[in-house]
Length: 174
Ligand code: IMP
Ligand code: MG
Image 1 (cartoon, rainbow, N blue to C red):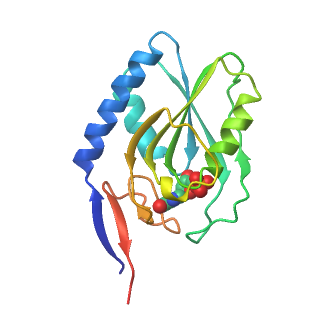
Image 2 (image 1 turned 30 degrees about the horizontal axis):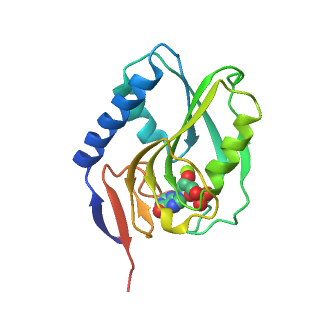
């Protein structure tokens, strides 16, 4: 068993989700935004966020290949599952769990922009700016986290720990 240390509690997360949702609600009122989650990591955050936003939205998901069964990915991003909703003329809000090197989200934003949305913004729950490789503007950000591998609240290590309600750091095993 790997040991875990909680770095952001479920209560802190809930408070932050409420803050982000109220900002987003004001900005998107009457716009029927299309909220696009990046699977799998964003599923917990996105479900909390859209319910807290409490305005009519449509949702869709993409699957992008990034991290495999290790803590480092190849750096090559591939679109594994596209959105099913037409993007043209829509107010699109991309929801991501964590921005690390920025490659995953940069790839998706470029791809969506090409399809002419009315607007395109990014909401991320966690940000690890220390490791950024490409610039990405985060319009709505939850927490900045230290340069360490985190799990829980949808984030995994080798498909484990996504179900944990708090954000945790895995402590190295001896
Ligand atoms: P980027 O392309 O380097 O920004 O990678 C972002 C993706 O890598 C996220 O969607 C996560 O799936 C994954 N990732 C980055 N850092 C972590 C972490 O600390 N824990 C779990 N997954 C992470
Ligand atoms: Mg992810």
